[in-house]
Image (cartoon, rainbow, N blue to C red; front, top):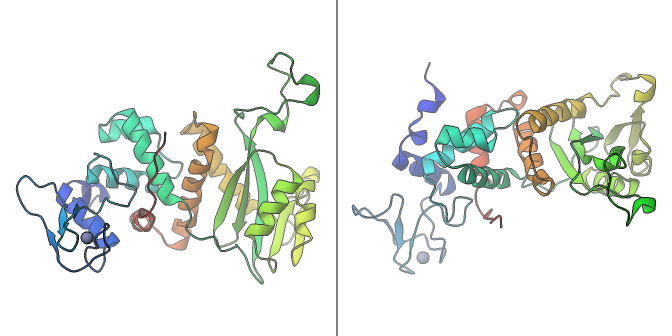
Length: 312
Ligand SMILES: [Zn+2]
């Protein structure tokens, strides 16, 4: 059996460019400067960089990197593809340290590459989840500790002491919604309160859906807006009642938390939404939907355009 890692596009720079070009430009190169598609020639000189084209309409050179997450980076294209494949195929993610060792690059470069890839993983669809006859589960989880603990009124202005910040207010909160047999959408929320939860739940789930949650008060207001709101009562050890449960979303959280604990231990809170994009992406392109590691990487390429970002 041939290893996926021996794929030519992961080894050879010209093959890597050709692989990306075939996906970004299925009908041939497009000039990113003037939008022209005619009178474009591939530059073939020995001193020309791989993948350079020249547009004879605006007389400017370009490569497939322009206007994508690859722009203005000196990282070889085959390394980008290796990193994309690794992030797509590792269920709990891959740390920048590991990526740096595997690619033989600096930690800084590995961090840069992986955050840009997460940007490409960000969902393109803003269509609400669910619909008539469909079930959407909503739940929150708390983990790690927040960078900005909520200080109680009584303690405001007094010296900070460890131990005074207890309870869920000191943890990072994530709210996630999952359509059974469909997609997940997760959100980092600074405060898990009814207003925040109601806002997210009602804006991201179609009203005709059946909403399944636990007995938490956070969902009472949002629940009234849906066709059906079923609650499972975890506090009395009820976990399944007919088809009423929140096991799908709990399964998602379990992978997410194992990844954040085991792989991404030192994630800054301001970057948390990017890691959520990563876990959402893999879930939404999962093997149960017939999407294998290679197909998932192909899917990721669709997100590389128009996602340039700088992180400083
Ligand atoms: Zn042009």
